[in-house]
Image (cartoon, rainbow, N blue to C red; front, side, top):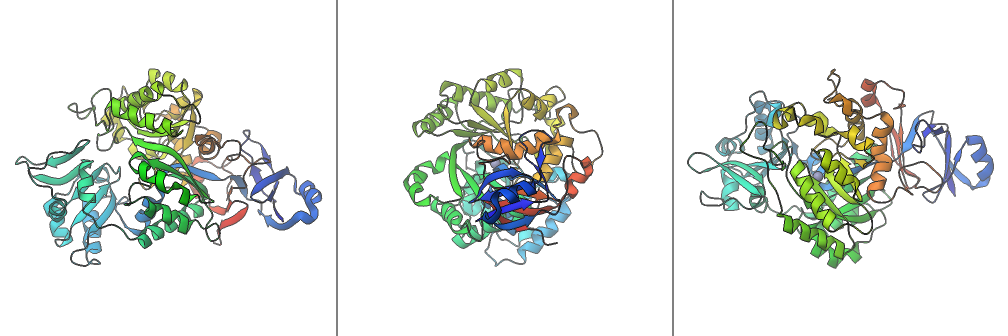
Length: 529
Ligand SMILES: [Zn+2]
């Protein structure tokens, strides 16, 4: 009837340092916590399964509060350029991939980052023509706000010298007005539309690969945004229905609904009421990202004074989207990286505050005193990605300048100001491993680096860092009374590691291995290594 988890050091995360040795679970819920002896005596014959934790360390189930599950799976099964450290390496990988394709198949690659190359080379479309043997090419940059297309891809997309930049996008051109192949934000949509639609089977495989990977990293759930990127909304929805069957795979998926997919979503929602899938806030983008200088700033970029970034919506249009969410009793989840985008978003929310739930401010890359004061007045939570600190520094210092840099990803300050923060990866943009996020939050440096951290005064404690991925993710969706803590009545979702994160040195954090992942009281991943 029930399962007893025992012989572990079980951090409840209800209070710092609080730990117990056993948990008794029935029907996916925690019935009681305490000592093995006490729980064994209390529940006797009701205990039908005993799980020996072998003196390992159990935490509430880690949940990634912002990622793109299907996109992460695609990254796992597609050509991944994100680890490449030179243009030559990237070229070799592209040439190799091209040889596996038919003559008219698209060469798709993800995650290139020229900031990792000594010469910061960005390929020209004509170089890609040669590399791909004439096949159409579309490569996404690590930030997903910049893309590279070759000549064939531009032709198929109908982009010519006369094509004007679409709203919210830039077709980068040479001195003769010809496209170089580099496309920013919505300009890439023209090319993406020309790529043949992925098959349903491909989406299912991507989602399944993604979730299996997350479970192996100790993640019991994730808040994902994928419903508007794969054609008609029933395609991604049916991938969720097929993959999270509650038998072979149990995983708690909370899905944001992109505003462009909302009308279709309304119509089919009833058919997709699934046991481990729930639907959340209306997703809106307010700006781009620091990498491509499309994050919308109140003052120009330090290293490109001619630009302050890109705004996606006029004030009035953003306000209308918030209004629409309210009409359907929904919260909004707004991607905002630059301080100007945050200001615009706060204004829109202030003028039409949520009567229930909490709105989500995703990323919050740059703040100031006023913005912090305003956020404190609103029912909002902040979806932060500690991994961005490891990835965006040190080049971010050049982008923003030394005056603004103390206000970039100031996690310590946000927590001290009592703003609710949830932790996520934004995979596939960043690696999905929650331990990398926890490491970045407490060290503010990349693994392997040995300095005191980027803006070290903004480091979090281990308790705060783990809380981002437990109670923080729960609070983001108003579920802090059933998730995020190991306590009577809460859901039996647990992450078991072979290391005590509160005792290990900083450099040992990433050596921790996931021993078990438990969702709904069941072991859904077991490290047999
Ligand atoms: Zn995202």
